[in-house]
Length: 325
Ligand code: HSE
Image 1 (tube, rainbow, N blue to C red):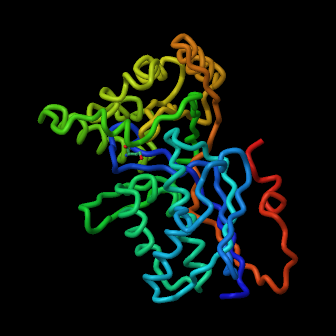
Image 2: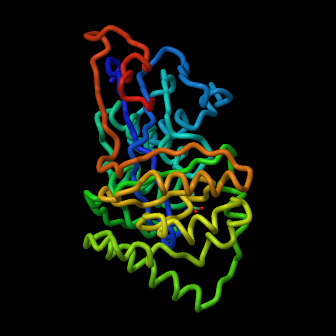
Image 3: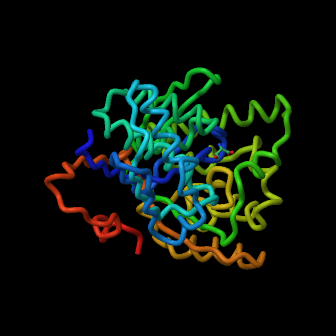
């Protein structure tokens, strides 16, 4: 393993998909890359503006997650060289922390010959993140339906429908998951619980069967979105009216503030949906960036190299051409 250099490309994710709070997730075609090798002393090579301010010592999340893998596998590698580049915006509801956790687990496991199963990595990732939705999507790709009881997470992966694509509107402000979870009530009514069980079940069935026309009814939620609306001005209008502009449905992406519209690849006027999202946010004084993202069918893509056989090349040079432009 001392001769190995591992490079992992891991997808972003959207969680909840509306009604499936802490349960549903889908991987998206936006990526982070983590490079890991054994070193004489721990060092970090972070690329891009986003990485500024992240810890560059052994308190770093990637380092700590890697050490959990080594400890689980009964291997000792105290010093690591870690590189990272990410196109996934931080604290916007696109699963950046889940991608970092999954990327670190996959990279560390590959570095030591992959002794841990994907299921084991999923259990570890879920316990680290506190819910399985984002980590499941980043680890398995596609749409992941999962349930966690605090001990064990179970999941089923669904292949995303070929006609499904997404438009995300990423507001130019950050919203921590902690703050967005703090807005939630500790109790809800039986009527709201039944409402969400129905919508979430219908959504999974619609996504599994390809009945995409049902998404508009199924993507509704009463567990978290109404309580988070005050944190994301314009959200309620977007969720209520996106389908009028041709979207299949719309939701808050994870804990927000990003909004996500599900759109059919057949949609005749995608520009109208994009304009509606941008205009609605702008009316609230919020600038946003839009991105068209496809569901990503794959989990981490892992490359293992022999350090002695390949010349060192900085991570950005290796992934040039793949990063978001
Ligand atoms: N299910 C989580 C939430 C996703 O909505 O709080 C964000 O990490």
